[in-house]
Image 1 (cartoon, one colour):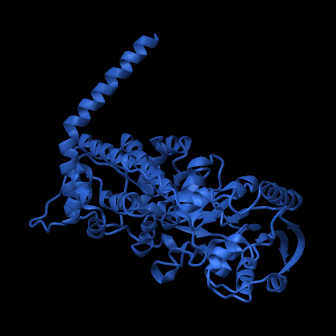
Image 2 (cartoon, chains in turn purple, blue):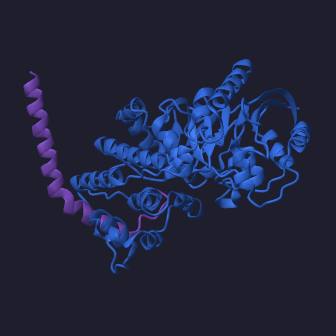
Amino acid sequence: MYTDPGFWSLIIAAIVGAGLTPFFIFRTKIKEWWANVRRKKQL
Amino acid sequence: MLEEKSSFRDPSGKVYFYSDGTIYRYIYPPYFDAYDRLIESGLYGDLISRGLLIPHDMVKSLPSAIIIQPVRVPFISYPYEWCFSMLKEAALNTLNINRLALKKDMLLKDASAFNMQYFEGRMTLIDTTSFMEYESGMPWGSYRQFIQHFVCPLLLMAKVSPGLNRLTSLFIDGIPLKLAAKLLPNRLHFSPSVLMHIYAQSLDVDVKGKREVSMSRTALEALLDNLEGLVNGINYNGRSLWTNYGDAGSYTARGIESKMLAVTGILNGIDKGAVCDLGANTGTYSAISGSVLSVDSDHDCIDRIYRDYESRGLPLVIDLCNPSPSIGWDNTERRSFLDRLHVDTIMALALIHHLCIGNNTPLERAAEMLSNHCRNLIIEWVPPEDKQAQKLLGKKNIPLYNHGVFHAAFGKYFKIVEAHPVAESQRVIYYMVVT
């Protein structure tokens, strides 16, 4: 890496990432559940 | 063997050109482990199958360097020459590449828009040495670079003016966050993503007692997911005067037909090779000629070509009266547009009056410039009496813009082979070859 990541920028990235984690996990689980439902329907 | 002038920053490798046009990338020992992981993890194969990374052949593996030969990109273009849709696709592909890399325990160490190029119809990563091994807790170090190279210009283009993309030529490592925050409309403060990624980040607070920042893999995935949502949500649907211009206002139905017949007749009768359509408008003649390059100064026309034509060549936003200059270190890091423009055939249809009346360029200078970049020229003469030429002329007086001077000026650099008058018009389509 030849670009300074910027300490403050990394803090913002960490805050955004951590703040969105619960929502992201919930959405991922819903997507997986829905994919399973569709797969079962096709079978 | 010549070193590619833009690869000097990267300690992982260098790019060299040979006189026959082949390219070699030398990968140095500090990057050996990451390169091995890229190949062995299957990430390289995955990215190639999706058209997201430029393919390469392994040439030689030496203790001092691994030498690979990437496929050559036909025409290198820069972000400040792209339309909104191209930059957006490049941003989304960068995020997609990063997400696929993370699945294989790798991350993009650079998120520079210059690493993306138009290749086989899509925006593709050309820097094989852009990957690093991911370690648990590692944040994405190129996050700020991604925001400056992609998110800031996309927002500025969509919310302020598409012309602001040219700011990326002034700020070669991305638009500074403070500048973007000042230029963007205040209402964007209400968008939580823009608030965090641009406004909050632009505060650049000097935190005392700096420690390592760590974030979980899930948090990193959530960040990438959020950035993808942000980029996907930025839309631009501009329609300028020129997107509806076409041929309708300048020709009768018979005129359009005869112009089309003249152009296709010339193209079918010559060894056209690589064609560049200068002043492409919405790409009608680019499509007919199978142009590899379509150029227009109007952003919205180029954006429309990019969105509408699937089998298009590379469309670029270039003002021929002020084309992209050479920029960067030693003025050689990013080459000027005209320095890169070497094609077999140039089409300049309904363009000459814009160059010579709109910009007061003498006809001889226009002929000289065109002769330096092609061997065949298909050009449309638009006389000063023409309706569109009259609009540009207004109260200007340009006595040396006439048919006689046109013949003399172009005859100095070209041999005039064919002339096809456009029906029910005073315009003429010429086919010329460089002498």
